[in-house]
Image 1 (tube, rainbow, N blue to C red):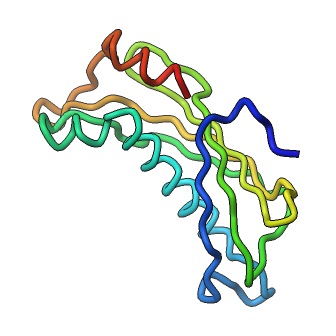
Image 2 (image 1 turned 45 degrees about the vertical axis):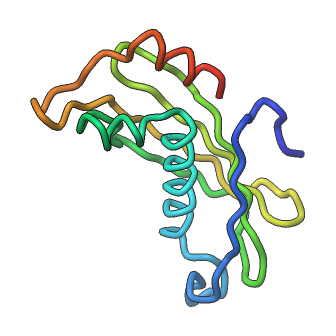
Length: 136
């Protein structure tokens, strides 16, 4: 049963090319699905626009995926995402990946820092940005 605490969801179609020798989705594609969910979070929070305007934005520093159940073609994957934590300049995202039968197939964790690509240093998450991120 999908957790209602996850405010973001993204449904992606599984492509036949994502299958491996064992005829299930190759593990590297789970990371790609989580990347799509991360990008969605960056879009809805304004982090992507912030980077476009200022060259300051999120940079992934860690990602992990624990596999629970295989995914198969044909089918879809539903990625549910929520903020796991927000610190001074870093934040974490928590992902649940489900198949079409609502079976939990993977659990993922990302850590990103807010990074100023102009100065090659992290920057503090502003109060306004924190408020937006906390919605998710």
